[in-house]
Amino acid sequence: MESTIDISHRWQMGSEARALVILTGVLLAFGLATVYSASAIVEMQAGYGHAHLLVRQLIGMAVGVALFAIVAKIDAELWEKWAWPLMILSLVLLLVVILPFTATIAPRVHGSRRYLFGSSLQPSELAKLGVVIWGSMLVIKKGDQLRRLTKGLLPFLVVIGALDILVMIEPDLSTAMMFTLVLGIILFAGGVRIGHFVALGVLLIPLLYVKIERLNYVLLRMSAFLDPGAAPEVNYQLRQSLIAVGSGQIFGVGFGRGRQQYGFLPFGYDDFIAGHIGEEWGFIGLMLLIVAFALYAALGFRIARKARTPFLQLVAVGLTVTMVVTAYLHIGVATGLLPTTGLTLPFISYGRSNLVLSLVMTGILVNIGSSRERVFRGAKADPLAFLALSAPR
Image 1 (spheres, rainbow, N blue to C red):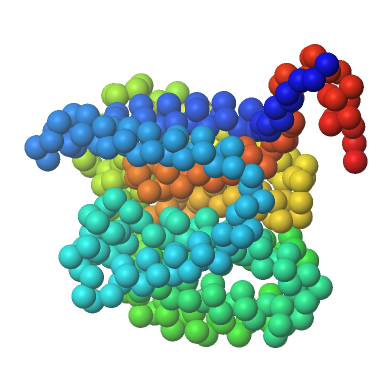
Image 2: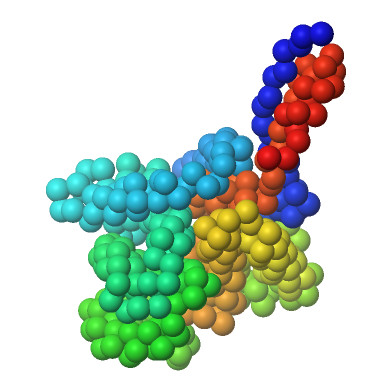
């Protein structure tokens, strides 16, 4: 008896990938509620509707969820072929942002030029993904050459140096530091020599000091962190965040009841949203947030350990580090443990570029944590044909 057998494939999520999807959903829901709580009164004071930023965040979430669903179904190994195009695109967009004749499409916002088309696209967010994908690809390609300084490590330094310079011109030193940190962790996981890191670090200290010295605002932020009484014009945001966190005490003042939502805390829905969370949800809320990202880290590293190829292992490590370190740096800044950086809280802070890229990164992790299975249709009429096709080769 003849029969037609249709063979297709589907991705079957592992337990870690399923847990990651659930955790992401919880963080997204909490993020929407927090953005609304932190921005409603401020937006009404500015002449907008109370749900102005919430609607914009929902639009970003819709785009992000759609891309999440797509990349979760695309074989993550294909990103290895797209590594160079992604890195080149990131460099080009970062260059467009800072060119003097592109001010019409890359306007200065709050003293920096970081966005294209108003505030719709932030190229540095795309570059974070580019660093992870490109860095992982090149580590695998270099192989044993990675342990040599000139042929192994130098190409990484040239490209990451170009990225760092472009974002520092915006200026955005914290993102430049994130690029370098994430690439360094990927190189460390790939087997680079520690001695090369130490030697290059010593050589780069004078250059880094000169660059930072030219960025006045960096010195002001550092002085404000080391001496809370210094640079009051810079320290104001941190002081208001600490007031918010202190007011929350253990259990918080309650959702929607925080005083900082009246605008005392600048960007309480964005760069300092953890301060707003500390006020309304208290120490318990911040601890649960820390635990949530610790769980994200645990799931991400378990996915990396079980990844199908060495390339995907490095990608999973890089994506996990990018998400979790960004979150902890943000919380550390809002609670006064770290100098002010301007990094947003993934899934929670207002910002469509960051939200979309966070969902894309998580979607890639979900795909890495999934297995590809064959699906046979129409094989019941001929069991022998099914056995022949499904037998290992």
